[in-house]
Image (cartoon, rainbow, N blue to C red; front, side, top):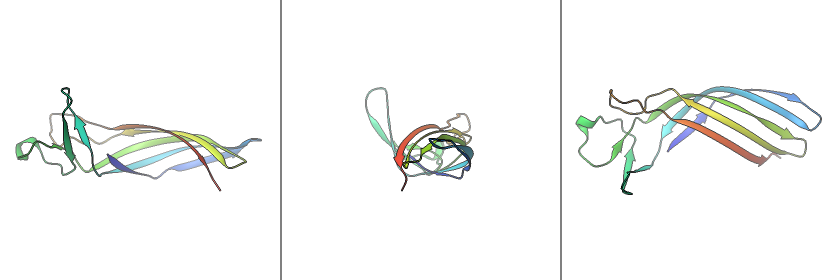
Length: 116
């Protein structure tokens, strides 16, 4: 799992029901923890240390700790404080430390909340 830190520029405009907003910007992901399941139902811990296969001495899966992406966000904030938004982050970094593979993350989010 990556802890995402988005930095979005957001534009909003007023409607009779509330505010509609949209924007986007860069996204930084920092690897924190995780596990991966194989086709036989077993699991392996994910380490975010960037070790390549030739340097691995354990049965853990190793990924790069830093992940960059570009995100889009949009939604509506109602005058009563409720909001709904959706977003998508396009992963730009190859998080697999081995040169022969390309592994990128993408993220879809849907949020419902209340602002006070």
